[in-house]
Amino acid sequence: MAFISSSILDIAEILKQSDIAAIPTETVYGLAGNAYDQVVLKKIFELKQRPFFNPLIVHIKSATDLDLVAAHIPPQAQLLANTFWPGPLTLVLKKQTHILDLVTAGKDTVAVRVPNHPVALELLQQLDFPLAAPSANPFSSISPTKATHVANYFEHTPLPILEGGECSNGIESTIIGFENDVAVLYRMGSIPIEAIEKVIGPLKIKTQCEATPAAPGMLSKHYAPKTTTIQSDTILESIHANTTKRIGLLSFKNRFEHESIVAQKVLSAKGDLAEAAACLYDALHELDQLQLDIIIAERFPEQHLGRTINDRLARATKK
Ligand code: TXA
Ligand code: MG
Image (cartoon, rainbow, N blue to C red):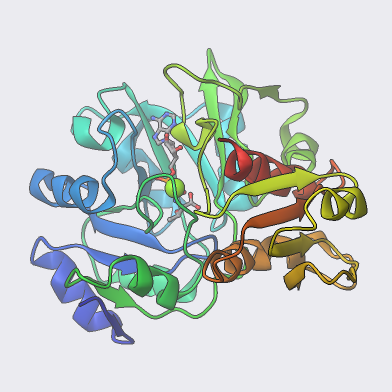
């Protein structure tokens, strides 16, 4: 049985004993363990049923620890770290030689970030190693934004889960890498592209990639509910095309009326993209439990966090 604990010290002890635990961050819950311990890393991959070609993110307690894991920090990377850390920005940088192949999937780069969550930061303060942590969901399913989401996924595993409340951002970190010191966006995330470009100028975008993805958050099917899900620009038309079905509706700010709608989630009645992003996964988790025939998700405005939300919904709706 997975169990939820509020004791940072207890979880720190567990992690020091070469075990793994789920921990809160401001984006989503992570499945964390000592990034320097091969046995621990194997446990993470095994529990998550994650393919070894998919590397992990290393969580450090402060930007001053960055050179413990990264061997080369391009000027733009330093600028982004200074601007957004602690926060939902992951930098992919040339790795230090001691960073294990299991963390990086054999690449010569490592993904690293400083989480902006008081519980995660206090936990990292208790440890003399960084934490490798993928999102705490089985491979390709919806990321968890509450301790109970993690507990539901791993109900038959003796996994400790550190309580940290609801994740305030609710969508994974934005991932930026550097190719010949030029910034490249690998995964849209909690920090909108526009905010990054304000700091370092135009970004090269490489988020669509199939065969050997630079960041498998890019795999075209990911973040997926079990229920058939479609994305729609014209909600009423989509409802009318599915009237014989039990419909779950996921909309941005408007509520819709139709007898086939069994459940409806309005992500932000006041039309706030950050609020919508924060509730997105919880709404998908809830709708996915209702034995619906179809989830119809409204397409968001293609700007700021709307782009990230559309990106996740597009991957969630992929067959
Ligand atoms: O917000 C987040 O980033 C959360 C929290 C827990 O920090 N973590 C998260 O981890 O979303 P995960 O494992 O679900 O996604 C990590 C992504 C994957 O798409 C992986 O391919 C990419 O980071 N990644 C890791 N190392 C990489 C590398 N060296 N080069 C390119 N992409 C990398
Ligand atoms: Mg993930």
